[in-house]
Length: 346
Image (cartoon, rainbow, N blue to C red):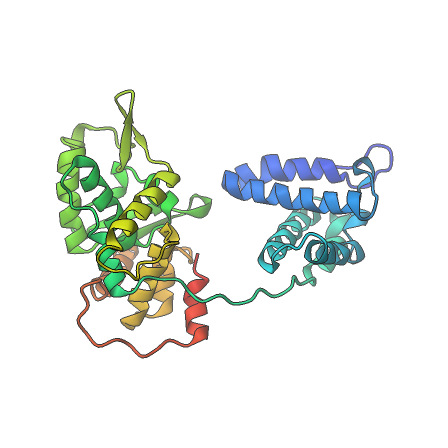
C-alpha cells in the first residue's frame, strides 16, 4: 500500500512516480510523448496549487484533488494562463486518468476519482477540416520527378504515406518485415500503444514499392528484417528517418506542387495527407466504420489470418475505389457533423 508512513494517508508523490515511471510505460504501454503529456498535466496542477492556492509542494495530498480545487484549476488555466480549451481538456483528462489509476491502487481514493469524473472542460470551438482537394493531392504526389535517388525515395515516401493513411511515426518506423507485396498485398503498421493493424495496398502502390525495393533494398531476402524501409545513411549504415525529415519532404513537395496548383496550402503537414485519404474514401461512399478501421481507431484481432485477410480484402476494395484519379461526379456536400467526424479521426 502506497501510504505516508506518518499520516497513513495515500502518498500522492509515490503514486504519481509509479504511475509515470512504471504503469504508463510498462503496463499501459504508452509512448514517451504521451507520458510526457501526462507529466506536464500533473505539473500544471501542482503549479496551480503553489501559485494560486499557496500550497507547498511537500504538503500536497489527495485532499487537494477534490472538486473545489479541480474547478479552481480549470478556471485558473482559462482566466489566468489563457490556455486554449483543447489544452485545458487535455490537462483535465490526464488528471482524471491518474485518479482512475490511484483508485485502483487504493480503495480509499475511489470517491476522489468518481468526483473528478463528473467534471467537464470548456468546449472547444469547431475548426474547419483541413484536407487536400484532388488536384492538390495529384500535384503533391507528383512533385518529386525521380531524377535522383533521393527524389525517388521521397516520392515513394509520400505515395505510401497517402495510400496507407498512416501517421508519420508509423511510416518512419516501418521495416522490411512489415511489407507484404505478394497477394494479398498489405502493410503492417504499428500505431499508438504499439497496436498493429493490417492496411491493404493498391496494385499501383505495390508496383511502385517493387521498383523502390529493387533499388534501395537489393537482395532484400538476405537483409535484416528490421531494416527501415525509408532511411538515410549514417556512417554507411541505414538509419530510419526522423519525423521532422518527413515533414520537410512534404513541405518541399508542396512548394514544387504550388507552381502547378496554386491552391496547395502553405501550412501543409503530414497529418493532412492522412485526413485527405480519409476524405477521399468518404466522398466515394465508403462507410465511416471501414475508414476508422483503416486509420486504426478500432481494435482489430490478428489472431486469425483468415479473418484478418477477409478484412484486408474488404478494405482493399474500398481503397481501390478512391484514388486521386477519380473521374466520377463529386459526392454531395458533406455536413459539418460528418466533416467533424472525419476531422476527429487521429
